[in-house]
Each structure stands twice: as C-alpha cells, then as structure tokens.
Image (cartoon, one colour):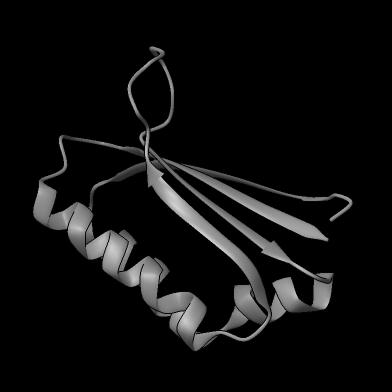
Length: 100
C-alpha cells in the first residue's frame, strides 16, 4: 500500500466558504479518480501550536494507482484551484509504503 500525506498551511485566515470549497473539491476526487483505496481530509483541531492548518491522506493499493491520482486532470484542476486562491502559504507532502 502507498500512503500519500499532504499538509497545508494557509497564508492568511481562510473564510469558511473557502474551506467549504476545499471540502467539496476533495469529496469529489474519489468519485472521479480510480484507484483511491481510502481518502481522508480535514482541518487541524488546534490542540498543538505550530501544526499545519489542513491535511489530506490518501491510500492506494500500488504506486501505479498513486501515479494515476497524481496525474489525473481532475486532481490537477483541484491543485490549480488551490493555487489560484492565493491562500496556500505552504504545502508539504510525503508518500510512503505500509502494510495494509
């Protein structure tokens, strides 16, 4: 199994309407892109200082399934929407293997 983890930090206070758009966009991706085994996302709950603001965690059965997701036009459109909004201050990601 491959796990893809993305952490976002917003560069300013993000309105609830923007977060609603982010949630809606993320909710659509598993319906549009084959090969996603599990897909979770949400804002930081605010327990610890210094955390990222938002996380996305996606699981895939294989590296090939991850690459389909990474390169899928709907995923790329979602990434472009995030970038166009001007509210992403930083993004970090990692992909790693795990036993499912």
